[in-house]
Image (cartoon, rainbow over all chains, first blue to last red; front, top):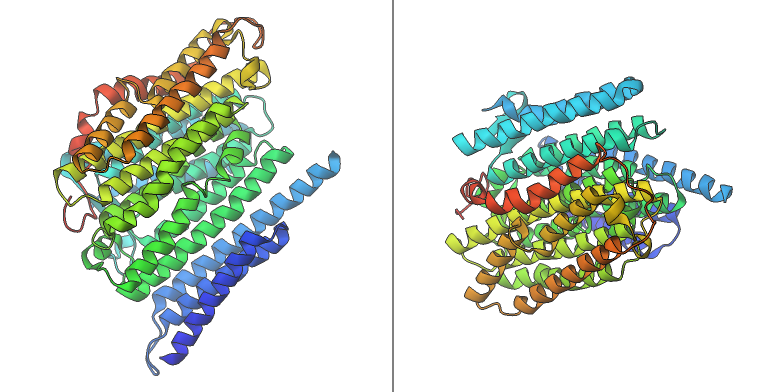
Length: 94
Length: 484
């Protein structure tokens, strides 16, 4: 049980670290990376929630949520990077 | 069980894919899909008003393991508004994007946005809500960036980053809900939610994420640039519908599912920023140099009113006055939805004709574009909240409840907000009726002017005179744990 708590607390710490960097950094790339760190924190919390006692199978629902969340995070990151590239091109034209 | 609930989601989704593979026919696909989607949303609303709550377990899996779609009074009304507004926007966009290189991209993303919105309104599962929030956010960012200029791209990027932050916070809240209550089905949660620490943490995280997306002061900073720099049909959708989706979730969470968890002290946490947003947003709209910026800041103010309603309702015990505040809240939300989409479409017509939307140079608009000027004025009447608009009825209810429950503090806020709103409307009309050649010569009434006028008429006349139906639909709730 304490291991679950350790994972959940680590996840919370990651979430908060990412949150802080997303809000404070000016550079877009840094903010995208920070968002992904935050996302990893949330996923870690979900994985920790899925754990049941030793010997029992894990709860499949939070794991399914993590998988869906990962897909969303990857697509959102791709969109952010694509927009960033477009913006750099646009600025080079001016 | 009802298969009806599938159609408002599946129709735009199928059309989006079709528009993607057949870009040369994108406009016709979009219009036909908007029409069919409108019919399906009206069908759902009609069925809810007749039979009450509708539920559909997707794939036959019962809620718990499976995901349920549900429609009750609140979701049916918002769904119908979305259907009507998007039909008008579709007709307008068919003219706006005619011959434009952005045409095919617009229709695909626009239909995807509609899919996500309708799935969100009908979703009965918190995780599914998270997925639809993200889908909506991604489609909305794509649409906001459609113009392609530097300002639009920068605004879209900021919108994306803050939106992602919002949905991550929401997801963290969903995780806490699951850890605390062992279910994500919203109807199950409404029955088991209790005032325990897990509920407070979850509600804080989810609300924090949602008020970024609903642009509650001081987290509204992304909204004016994103809404004002997008193409007019996109601005209309973003201001009328997309921010309402986040607001809808706050209503669901605060007033229904976690009703027993929210204390009247907590209500101040969203009531005070709401009050500031009303005054500050209206003031910024009065000072705005551009027409679309004015409309965007007015959205910030109107969202402030809606959060005031939520705070007021959260402070009231279950019963008749609370149901009345909630109905007024929904009336205000849809009234703003129709009025603001009309306003943005009107602003788009002015902008396309004049080539700019600087308010100080709009002299001659009333002569060159009489119908559009009338539309802007009519939409403005609903935004200010003059009778007989829906906004008037809603504000009246807000004031009577505030007086009856002794929350006098909101009276000067609403009064000041209304005066400032009247001031920004009359400043705009003053410039529009001034002599000048800013918008070019008078031409025949265009096809694009009709949908904007229809939306403005709905907000001002139809909702004001025909609001009685709302009072019967809103109490039909799938999630109100202890009854309204």
